[in-house]
Amino acid sequence: MRLGKMLGGGLSCINRKEASPILTRGRKMEVLRVQTIASQEKDGAIPAMFVRAETEQPGMTTVKGVNLEVPIIDFSNPNEEKVLDEIVEASREWGMFQIVNHEIPSHFIRKLQSVGKEFFELPQEEKELIAKPAGSHSLEGYGTKLQKETNGKKGWVDHLFHILWPPSSINYHFWPKNPPSYREVNEEYCKYLRGVVDKLFKSMSKGLGLEEDELKEVANEEEMHYLLKINYYPPCPCPDLVLGVPPHTDMSYLTILVPNEVQGLQASRDGRWYDVKYVPNALVIHVGDQMEILSNGKYKAVFHRTTVNKDKTRMSWPVFIEPKAEREVGPHPKLVNQDNPPKYKTKKYKDYAYCKLNKIPQ
Image (cartoon, rainbow, N blue to C red; front, side):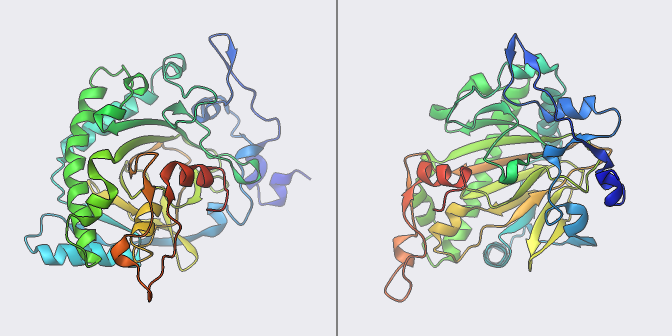
């Protein structure tokens, strides 16, 4: 009996012959792109390396029919104390929230999405021109494999990483040349984002009993990296069996995410997985590991994952607000005393990231 029949037909999607690497410019690719696999699997089969164990499959583990309504915060509310209280409560209790009326025009968000989508629709050879170099220790570039995967499983996603800020850290080699407006749009988006980040850091600082600029100062605001990742999740014949990105917390201080309209973001609540309600034009904010560490555990990094769609392409644009590689991050000195000892080690961000990506205990 075929394995697919044993599971009600679900695994009839599985192609036991793993996908072969493709050739690009005469050299063997280390990783076959998911977008290519999706376009080649005409019979509705997918390679087994994408199929998750039953304990991870979204079809088995998602709470059906319930959208998780994470806090929605109106950034334009003239009652600043109310906005601050909502940000702090959401950061403590949820580790994520959505902000609306954030002064980034909806037409501009559509422009950001449009230039990213156009890049992923370019011929494969053109995308490979800015591929992450083999053996690179940086995340920047176009690619597929991000981190060491449990049990050798892979996410149903391709991505593009590059730094948006600060100017001294930008490598324009990894910015798409096409569409021609890509650079202008992303530089303008970064200007908007810096205002959002400033307001979030000030609110979260005051929520810890600190002066509004103290979190920014200890994080060294001018050195913080804004790392953009564009996720491209092609349609998948068996969306109940795969994940776009497996369960994780972000390494950043904060992540500011713009999704497209295709449902896919899920968060863990009380040990169960729920779809996060899509709110048009909202920015999704994730508290990351470094903010949890800085706050000595008062703010919680959100445990989340992404699913994919059978018929539609899902895309998302997270920007990770991170320390520079050499920056040491630990609990803020004013939040630690004899009664509240540090709950986390102080370490360089590059060392934290290495351990996290390679699944080494911190």
